[in-house]
Length: 99
Image (cartoon, rainbow, N blue to C red; front, side, top):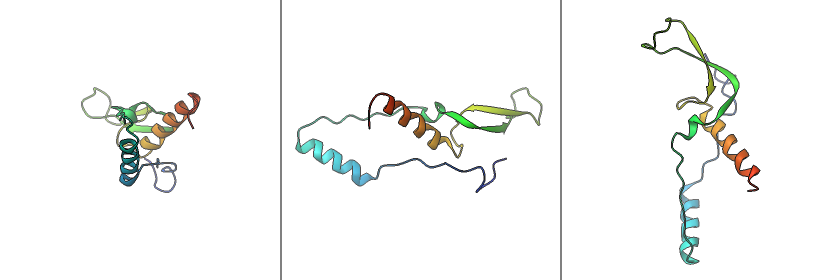
């Protein structure tokens, strides 16, 4: 039930370019440093939504055909999922004194 240009605000999150990764890895190799990578599985499922979003109940869940579910957490495929995850990660890193 989301309407483009009305409900899709704040749907982007920053993404590093491949050139940036290459530069960091080159610098780490030149300075003989170790580089670590972190992949957070199901990352988009950890963000708490700040707006009310409802979805239709899926077939086979024993609910009425027209039931709606209020989402409390983000889902993969949700337009705002990457933005919600980025806000959560950014806030957590700032609490840990990263800048």
